[in-house]
Amino acid sequence: MQKGIGIAGIGGRMGRLLVEEVAAAGGKLTGGIDRPDVAAPAGVTMFPDIAALAAASDVVLEFTHASSAISHARALAAAGCAWVLGTTGLAAADEAAVAEAGKSTVVVHAANFSPGVNLVLALAERMAAALPADQYDAEILEMHHRQKVDAPSGTAVFMGRAVAKGRGVNLDEVTDSGRDGHTGARRTGAIGFAAMRGGQVVGEHTLLFASGTEHIALTHRAFDRRAFATGAVRAALWTEGKKPGLYSMMDVLGMR
Ligand code: NAD
Image 1: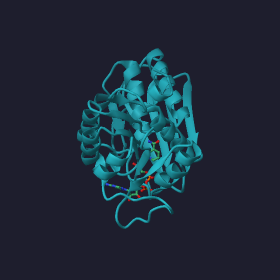
Image 2: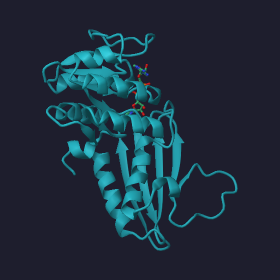
Image 3: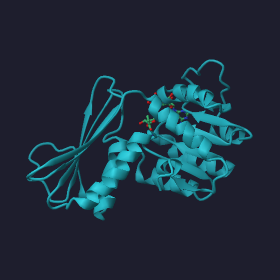
């Protein structure tokens, strides 16, 4: 890499870990951006905005807030700067902007950069294809720390998409999320979501296939956010020399 790696949201929980992980991987940090009221990690160059950071970097690692997705997608595409995006809670319009950026630059978008979760996603799709939807009810249970602002988690949604893909259905048409009150009986083929929030849980996800005669559960527990930071830096280094496109962590891990 000629210029180096920039970080959007550098003062946040993930941003601070990314500073350490870029150094641990032997990468060159160009600097970062954050909100004006957020203190920058010591010794880091701060840029005025995303356009300035993109111009100074080969790739930008971003873990911020969904409200930045559309403007940042445009800025990174205009600069031809690669983008490793980990922010969750993206709406359909945000996802469309991310996909559009992938037409002119390299974009790696993952709701979860841990290698273990990506393996779980691959297994979820295969299990869903093997277990008939009218016999095996798919339920996704997740728990995260009390500060998390979106639910269900991005990873839970990706698990749901993996199950839907394995079953050949559209997740939006079969989602059953946040049950409360008189919901009626479970719809055959529904993919259920439940979210728990509390304490400082880094991230726990269980995908359960429940039939009348057996339960099969696939659980992933992250004990340290560093699992995401290490994976994201790996993705940033992987972008070098790649053609523009929208990639996932599966591509980075060579699982596709
Ligand atoms: P955080 O609140 O600690 O940090 C976010 C930082 O981004 C803050 O410092 C905030 O000031 C900054 N920010 C927000 N909008 C900005 C903007 N427009 N420009 C510059 N900076 C901006 O949160 P966190 O725990 O670090 O998580 C950040 C995001 O990453 C969340 O969406 C979270 O769900 C997601 N996340 C994804 C993964 C993954 O593997 N994909 C892992 C952990 C967290």
